[in-house]
Image (cartoon, rainbow, N blue to C red; front, side):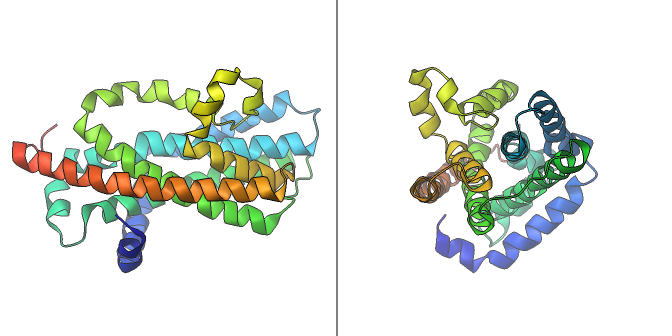
Length: 265
C-alpha cells in the first residue's frame, strides 16, 4: 500500500468507514472499548489529580483519549479481518477489484474516529464535573497532531490485522498487550518516570510519538522543535508501517489461497 493507492480509493475508504461506524454503534463491546473505558480512566485520573491544576487535567484528558485509540486498534482493528471471516464475507471482499488493504484501512479509520469521541467526552467531564477551565494552548498544532496521530494509528493497525490472521495465537495476548502500551507510550504519565532501559522501547512505538505531539501541543509543555520532531517520527512510522502492511497483506492472501483456508479459522 502507498499514498497513491489511498488517494485513488479515497471514496471507497470513506464509504467503508461510514458503514463500519453504523454497524459498530450497536455493538456493546465496541462502545465500552472506545467510549466508556476511556471515560472511566479519565474520571479516575482526574479525581487523583484534582489538586494539580488544569495542565494535569488536560494531560489526563488527552491521555485517556489515547487509551481509547490504542484499545480500539488492538481489539477492533486487530480483529477486523477475522470479523469478516466469522460473518462469511471475507471471500467476497477479497474477490473485489478494490485492494483488500484499502477496505481494512477504511475500517481502521472508522475505529479511530470513534475513539476520538472519548477524548471529547473526557474534556467535557473535566470541564463540568471537576470545574476545570481547560484550554488547548496551541489549537492549530493540536489539530495537525491529531491528524498525524490518526494516520499513524491506522497504519499501525494495518500491520496488526494480518498478523492476527496468520498467527491466531497472538490474539491470546491481546489483553496483556493493552496496559503495557499505556505505560510505555506515556499516555497518562511521562516515560521519564520509568526505568531507563524502557526508553528505547517507547521510541519504537508510534503511539508514543502521538502522545508526545498531543500532550505537547495541548498543554504547551513542549518546544516547537520537539513537536516538529514528533510529527516527523509519526510520518516516518506511517510510511514504514504502510510498506510493511502491504507486504503482510500479500503474504496473508497468498498463504490463505495456497492453503485453501481463506474462510477458515
